[in-house]
Image 1 (cartoon, rainbow, N blue to C red):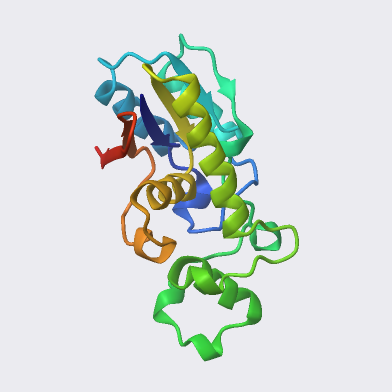
Image 2 (cartoon, rainbow, N blue to C red; image 1 turned 90 degrees about the vertical axis):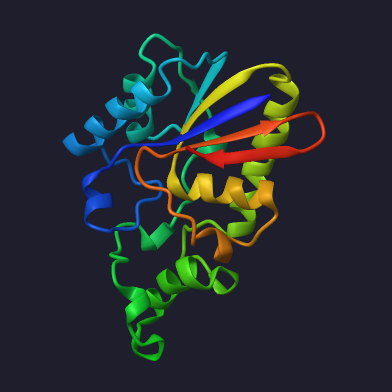
Length: 199
């Protein structure tokens, strides 16, 4: 089976480098144009099913990518929940002195630069829970779509976590892989192992 994961287009919060987990932010005009380009990139691909995160930015993205396809809303590919960190600015933290950061800022730093030390603020989701629900989704589609190709419209951290699970690497390593708005990632399961690539 093959699964093509597409990150949603840009939102104003992406452009402003704000933590955007489960807050429901719409695509901006740049984001819509990005996805129109992606639609051209995957135009010749046939998909048997489309799974979409329940957030509006992914549903908008799916509507641009494949307007003729039914959107199957899938909670397990929703973005990680940042809880009280939602909306916080993360731009530039890696250039600051760690000891000078507030407790809240330190968790943003840990999330991206030292994930093993990340402890979500109230309402937030742990990395372990995030991995568990995504691994459950991967195991599920391996069985349900054995000889099919599925399209998964989701989020940046979701694709990073899927790469971690498939390549068996840490999130710290995986954050070094750049996945921009509208980027595509393909994972193929041959019955024994996964093969994957960004395209």
